[in-house]
Amino acid sequence: MKRKTAIDLIWQILLAVAIVVADRAMKLYIIANCTTGEVFGEIPYFADFLYVKNTGAAFSVLSNNTALLSAISFLFLVAIIIYKIIRKPKHFMENLALVLFFAGGLGNAIDRIQYKFVVDFIDIKWFDFPVFNIADIAVVGGAIAAIIFVLFFDKEKKNG
Image (cartoon, rainbow, N blue to C red; front, side):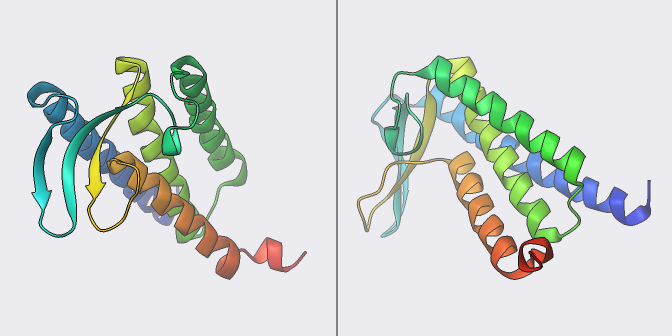
């Protein structure tokens, strides 16, 4: 394995592990110490930490369809792995998008399999938005990185 390839793989694994560990640690703390609906902290003027059980996907889509959402999560994770194996992406932004998608998807998939719901806990104060978690932040970050990659760096798309 070339040195650059090894370094790329190491940062990707470390970032994914850090995100999943942070997500799991917060969720395990919340489940062990809080009751559903409880506000257990805040960032003044920005967000409350509020324990919510989400049985759906983004914006509670497909609520109470845990088996279907678990299957979709699993297929999503497998698709990312297959994409990385076949395409072997080289660009930082493309790899960042894939790592963030994978880590966020894995964090929420673990919840769905283990608890039959996703633990959400970040509630933004200054606008009405669904409660979310660290894994959700990673998925949104992945979407932003993917958009940046496609718009500014994807040579294949630009060349036809």
